[in-house]
Length: 547
Image (cartoon, rainbow, N blue to C red; front, side, top):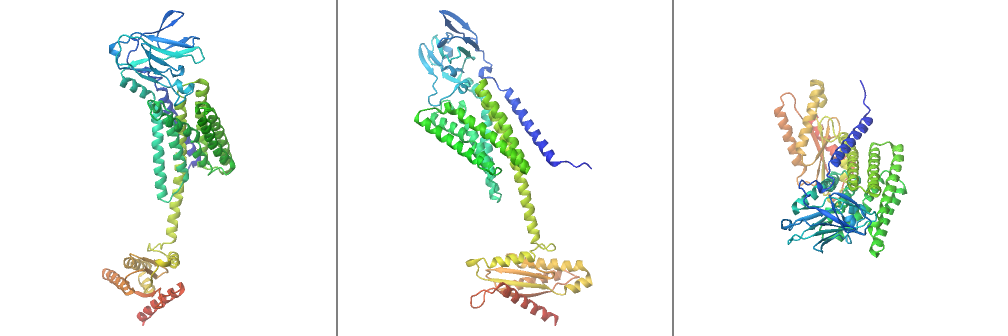
């Protein structure tokens, strides 16, 4: 019979899961519309042109225009009364675009409240409401040279506001969906942490991952153009976005402290805090904008990830644990997507760098949660087995009630009750004639008598505790009861009578004795005296029956 290597199978399964997630994400990515130009409406009716050396030049959008002029102005004379109140959309923020109607500015790109660099401008949609009193006038758009002497102009959309906005929302649907999904996942992770804590399964790793997920989602949402469009709380959104980005790595570093026992992680945590504090001070004093110091955070993140992978690799060589391997794999995946996003951001100037990084974070989170759930399930299985083992160790196998070990522990706990202990009664019960029953009817009959005795004990002391402390010896303990010992002995006799009436072959007889913990002078007996007194009374009862 072929024996499967479970660890290899788990690794293969994890690789398949990652590959499936990656393929799905890439399929989504390649189907994202390049921009909102995919609207089915025909915008070719709006003819655009510009002047070069006094000559009118028509352009067909999208277009690329080479010009070393400081300002390139394009015009459209085709607006009519039908275009009143429509919305114009253009992706020209990188040129600090200005839009005017009859030489009156109706829009000027302004990022003073939320400064953006070239990469962020390149994906920003400028949305402009056209006037409601258009009368065959000229619409002009001024584009300021960004230093490249090249103007790349996408299709300029003029349509109803709801159509433009729906098209705009569809272009950012995937990254926003990922961000919202991460936020919801973070909340569920916190709920899972609280539920497990309620079950006395406390694992701070779950809380660290939840914090990381929520911080990442908040950064993704506040960094999106949707959150920045017509936002009256621009400045707050700006601060939250950058501080989330500067600090979101810290929860993961705290998570790694569980596996990496050296000062490197503490140093990295201090560096991230110092980075956020110093950048905040420099921004407040007006020396730099956060966007101008973004590269520092990028460098710090890259260094931190590389150091963490190196440390996790060393830790894995020493321990070779599945959860460490999963975390190491997650960091490798994050490194790949993070470096890819940085290349797209700083070198290639591709607009969807943020989506690439979000996909990487999402896979990173799924891997971490998957590995953590495996670890928690293993711990839960171990704890469950331990609880069962401990219960079995304190339980009589034949009767299901507590055994001698459980009895001794409970007796000891009574003397630790302090002021909550008023009084207690200890009952010793012994089965009469058990040897005779075994000899005459067999050991199965003897077991039946033992089980019947246990059932009578449970009915008698159902609001208290009872134990089987020997072959034919049982015990019951009553704490702070309003009833006296005779009350419980009468109940026990009733239960014995019920059994004897129902049993035609075997008859049950019990010898009983009890002892009250508190003496007449208010002092308490010692454990040995308490047991001895109950035992002596039980044997007095048995001796009377033998005579």
